[in-house]
Amino acid sequence: MDDPESRQEASALTHINPHSAPMLFINSSIPRFGAGRDDMIKKMEEYGIKHQAFQHENCMHTFWLFHPWFNQTVEWMDAFLKENLKTQYY
Image (cartoon, rainbow, N blue to C red; front, side):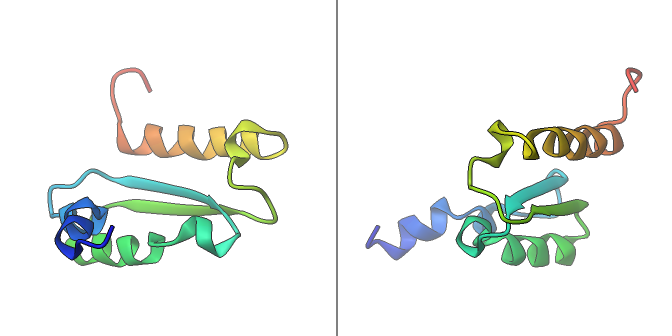
């Protein structure tokens, strides 16, 4: 995309605001697969938005589909959802 305005509009950072939902970040330790995460977390902290970040070491980008990362990913997601979407079901 050579159009800076379109790039900005497409960026999640442009849309974060005080009413944004809590967010869970799960990524591999390969830096390019977590690009932008720290910027997003910083912005969320400015607005006091709940967030958590987890990182799998030494794994591929599609880690959530494979063992041994699959089970840990599901556990992190389950705990985050239970904490942030408290309902009568939990």
